[in-house]
Amino acid sequence: MADEIVFSELPIAVSSTGPMSIVEAIDVSGYDQLDLALGVHQVNPSSSLIISIITSMQNEVDQGWVTAATFDSVSSAGNYQKITVRNFLRYVRYSAVVTGTGGSFTLTGLARAWR
Image (cartoon, rainbow, N blue to C red; front, side):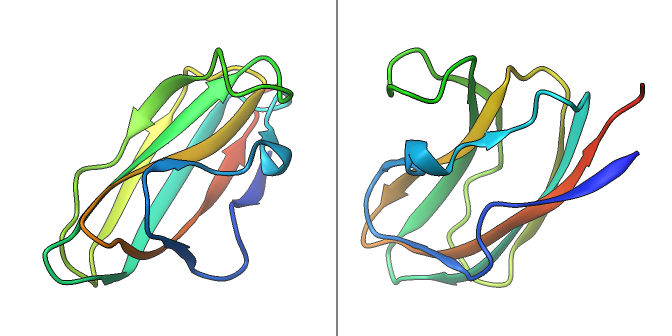
């Protein structure tokens, strides 16, 4: 079984380093694998983005979140990358490391269950 996983319906604009809002964390407890695609729409001049998938057993506080996977650093628009994440806990969200003034991206994929 596979279900679509979408971190945002619209491109995500980031201008500073930090994670996705904790209230928007996605419950993936029913899945065994995430196949995710990062599409970079814009990177401002002299900027770069590093997008990571972070995971935790809870979605109440920012402490205790760990990195499950990281996309390669990007510094230009039109960059597309895919990753497969198998080692995650109950919740996932993205975290961005922004150098410069930022940019925008989409993050979507499939959540797969083997049961």
